Image 1 (cartoon, one colour):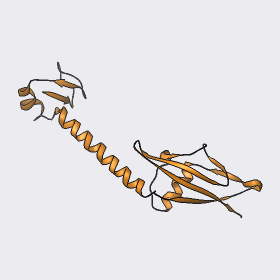
Image 2 (image 1 turned 30 degrees about the horizontal axis):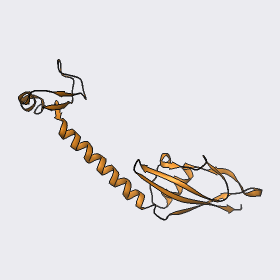
Image 3 (image 1 turned 180 degrees about the vertical axis):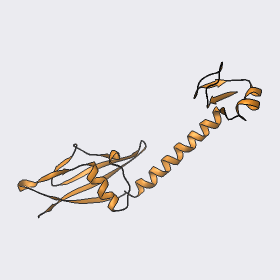
Image 4 (image 1 turned 90 degrees about the vertical axis):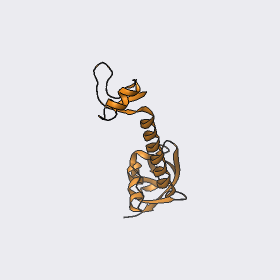
Length: 142
């Protein structure tokens, strides 16, 4: 039987190793003492976690469908922004709308936005879940 060790066991292996042992040793000692898990059991748990994480990412991504952000910034002559719009500003604006997106999930087209205009920003929630968000900078006069 193949098991995944949850602790270091002398003459058998270290923590995290997958080893082959006799069925009786696994059933009578390793599994009851919680020193190991069946490798198929661990694989099933990992697959379940991956599925749950993907479903959560898809739920979060559904909130972004057809979403356009407008971020008000102070603007100098010629349409250049005082400062810039980056991942922090995008995630902050989304948080105001009740959508939790971490700044590391925001992929900007050219680093940061420094001019007034409309931009397409990618949101990478999960390796398999990517959404496009449209961001528009507007003029604000103080």
